[in-house]
Length: 181
Image (cartoon, rainbow, N blue to C red; front, side, top):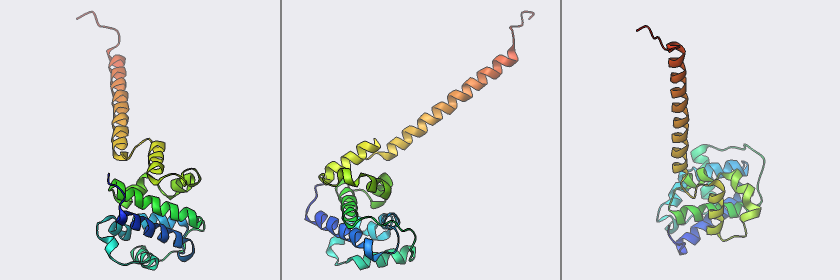
């Protein structure tokens, strides 16, 4: 995990402003915008070093999203500008300090989840808010580990059911012990 330096703060501010501006400048609902943005090539470029050295503005981000996904006016629910700024800032803080992709951050906490915790977490330090989000998901950043654990448990259940079924079939056909052998 890396510390938030000057470049990181600038990226967080930039993404926060893009999210905030989406309330009035982007046609889709906030949840659709956030999903598109966090999975976009534009966000992927922000994840890489050197993005901050290139001048950019909010309209460039919206144009990049429309190029990648096509224009859309799907959805009507638009979050408040403050909430959008916080979500954008926190997502970038998370990706930057944890050194993970925007896609992975979004996969861990989607727009609906971020929207639902805004009033609880928006006054916290970003690092504390992220820890709370991860604790609430019981993953602490290891969602792949949880998935693997869940698959292992399901396989154990399936195998134990197969073993029980096999034992039941054997006992059904063997009947009482044949003593005439």
